[in-house]
Image: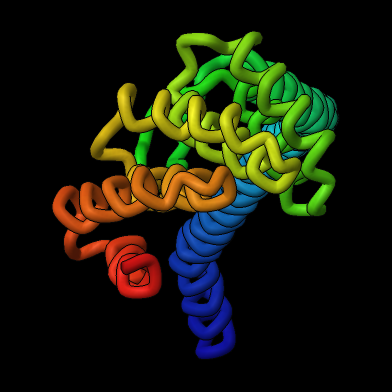
Length: 259
């Protein structure tokens, strides 16, 4: 009897525990499904993240490729610019050389023109204290005649100065040329000819620096011609007209000897 009750209780307890066991199994399936879902979600998330990373990587690769192409293009432009600069630098150097050649040519032309102008244009000269404009040929001929006189070649100097006066009758050199021609004639003992040219000087330019010497030279010619009276009158005129000159000092000494 007792045994039967025990069996009944056990059976009843089994009936009570059977639903609990079914509930436990059901709970375990839900957890598994949730775990699977979470796993799937994580896998999906990783897949999406992987795709995004792949896309990002592809985009970065494309951008890097574009950047490389841009850099290559930029390098090409830089190289082209360098070549252009080198070409322009070469042109600049060539232009600089051509400009230098042109400037040298201009200087040569300017120097040649200036030299030609010096040969034909009047230039300012100063002779015996007088400043005036003279043609280059006129100046050259006068200087050449004076150089002959200074060599003491008085016959040639007389011819040269006489020729100068014929060639340049209106020359500002004329008073000086008359003076030196008179001196050449005096050295050649042509006293009357010398006096004529000294007097021509005095008539043309009485204030000339050589005028006192010309008067003294006239007196010397008169002395050589034995005209002492005329020489005394000339020397007196010299002292009166040019009292402060060196020629006046010499005139006073000669007057003392002639009296």
